[in-house]
Image (tube, rainbow, N blue to C red; front, side, top):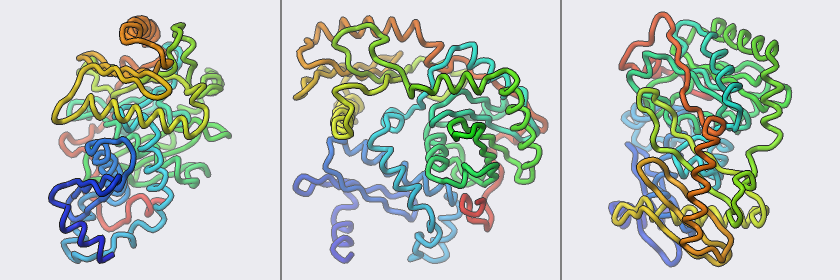
Length: 407
């Protein structure tokens, strides 16, 4: 511990350093200092972003106001006392930030569905409302099915991918959510780090794959929000929507072979031309990883390469718009424009001209399938009374211990 303190004192103000083949990155957020030690191809910027995810996960459980108040009273307070029980949540997050492209791209993955089914599910959520309901979110195996947001909230801001990622990580890491209806305070740190929403969380199927999340600003609205869930559940049952969703879940994603382009092994595509008036969540799509990336080691190796390309594309000193990279076992090409961000992986002998030709065909296929792959025009609703503008949440937290106090 003493040696670590010496390292922190000598390196902290540089924010990062390299010792042998290890990269050290420091991030300070208020009274908290987060440290990353890495041997991967990730850039300092990417490692810093991962540390911010950890910080925001802590905030989602305790709120920033609570942490600030604690350290104002006692500067050497051991925060682990308040985080008892969160080890699984933070461990799961650390695994995800290194392996899930959602975190790298700052976007959410949508479950590929027929546009008519997604629209019908959105309409169902849109009709099941109660005063002070702010967000209605339907997910299946951590993939977004649809989301509906209160109109008054849209005028101020939108739900950020970071907040949804952290919320889904909490749900995925906590078995208590599979036992029935859960009502718990939760902070959305990118929305407002100092306030709690109240989350109603319930799985709609016996296999615990389809999850409904309803966020309210009213602590006392459990029964009215629960009634919304019953209306949604009844509508899904009578219209056989749950069965249709189960069909969409038989395969976690889709095969790259559907694109119909030889030599293309994998890709990640994030549209950037999102209509601002809809305040959509940034989204991305990618096919299922197939051979030769079936083993965990090969998947990690490919994702390290994606990290490398992403780091060069988003370099703070010398950002690039197009990168053609020949690796040991594959060829990769990254391309960013005002309309999209795209990372592609090809078989090893593909030339740059050949890769660009494939990209043209891939972009045509994505355009044809975009209504199935993305939420294009998310529905909105209006509740009465409207949430107060500018509050961005229910209230500044009081004495309760956030997430853990709600279980």
